[in-house]
Length: 375
Image (cartoon, rainbow, N blue to C red):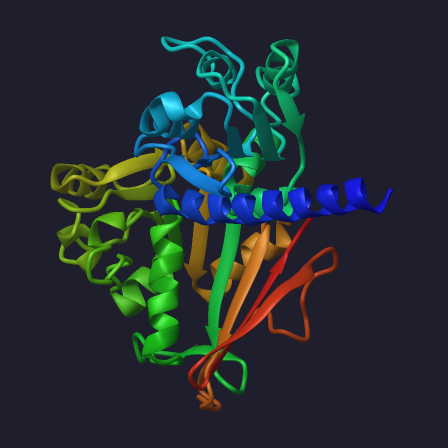
């Protein structure tokens, strides 16, 4: 009896290994696949000399073709009798192209190992049912939690009808996020800032309040060699349209989209001037004199956005926390203090809201990093 159990354990370990690779692959187009998730697919066959990858695919920019289609095209005839590792259940609904579940069957795939389940009612359980009906072996939920974390934006948008919200703050050693009237204050070092650029590159949008836009005059782009074209859309909460036409945000609009969330009563002349510059407006409802955030997030989901990185400032961060709209908290902390004129952070590592669990701790030079998520 030891033999079969050992064989099963070895196969399970192999499945985890290749699924982990598929999850890493899926990051390639994160934030660039519109309403579809960035899925990774790896096709592996073993002709007796050990497992060999014969095809890889990731959801294409814009959302089509799907990862399975890309991987099958690369594998060609080598897909017949092989195993496909897919980070999300293969789709089962017909559009202009056949479902991925059928494509796997038609290619002769013998075994499918899946990770996360798809909450889309057009898919949920149906993709696996198509495979099983064609006598394809199916193994579900391999590294499901890890895959779900990677595509949390898509899953949140599907289940909650709004994007996943990540609140990112950089804190000084004394818990401040800036200094009043000082513009941008360097709190963390170069390595941590590069990690922030990677976070931006994998997001659909970055959001800040008009206070931060006026005080810091940020560009809110990805400034890493080779990844400049991965800058996500910028969203500014600006009810009264105070954003200057001379700001870096407006001047970079030819390269990266800029949305301003403004109320109906805002100055129409200011709106017209920014619209001529290329700014896109999102009409917002107000509650107690501020932007109604739940409704705004619904509008962003309708625009196809699945992940929003909230970068500031303190008032906006506090509002998202109080509305219970934050799904992920990321705190960077630098080694230096700002002092008595600093702007206090609305949150720190010792005061994380209930319902979050710590996911990871890291170091970037002298800076610390901590991340919490909600289930």
